[in-house]
Each structure stands twice: as C-alpha cells, then as structure tokens.
Length: 156
Image (cartoon, rainbow, N blue to C red; front, side, top):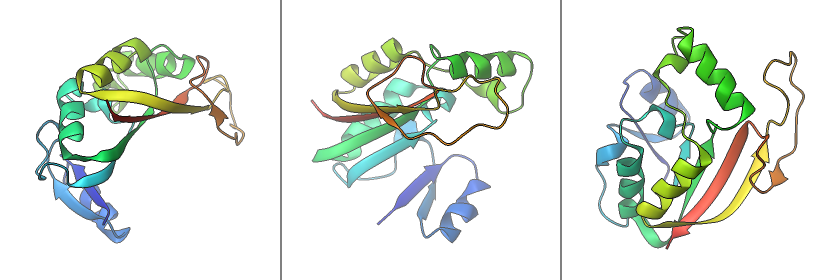
C-alpha cells in the first residue's frame, strides 16, 4: 500500500487521485505504528520541515529493520541550492519557506537518527540559469555539482 502524508490539505485530493492513501499530518509525529513500512521516501521535504532530525527519527521508527529510506535532496551546497536560496531571499512564495541543508548537515542528521548511507545518484548538473533544460540520465554517486541528489539509507 502507498501512503502519503502532508500537513497541507490541498495536496491530499491530488494524491488520492493517484491511488495513494493520504493522511494529513506532520513528519515530526507520524501517525503510524512502529515498523509499519518497508520504505520511506522524502523528495525535497527536509528543507520545509521544522525539525529535520525529528522527521528522520520518525522515519527510522516506522521503518522495518530491512527497510530503506530514500531522500531526494537539493543541497544548500550545490549550484541549484544557492539559486533557490537566492530566490527565497528575494521573496519567492515557495522558496522563502525553504531552509536548504548542506550535505554535511544531512549526513549528520541521518547518523543521529540511526541511518547509514549506502548509495547515491545525482542529476541536474546543468547550471540553474540555463533556459530550456535538457533531459539527463542520473549518474552514480553524490556529485557536488548536481542540483538534485538521491540518497539511499538503511538502519545502521
């Protein structure tokens, strides 16, 4: 079963249309039993939560021992992270609420929450100011010039 959680009410009907069971709530206090899920996916989420470490600890709690966590991140220490931070500073309605994390911060939060990073893939290696982005295949590893990185972690 696919389950989604969002504190905002408006995205929930869209997720339902996609066949996802939805719950209105926050990642810092997930309304699920311990070891309920085989996987947890956060895509560009940690930069919008109040307490990233608390969210990761909750993900750890609801994951089964053999489960995996996948983080889709725009890191603060990437060209795209800097680009979006500047947009936020100029009052962009979406990015002004974001607090982008560095790779070091994210890795520290993962470790504190009881996770071990096991794989990474990177994409969006084009400069953020480029018009008409071209499709890119993901590359293995966490590449510093990538605008979007996926990290896979397991319980330590």
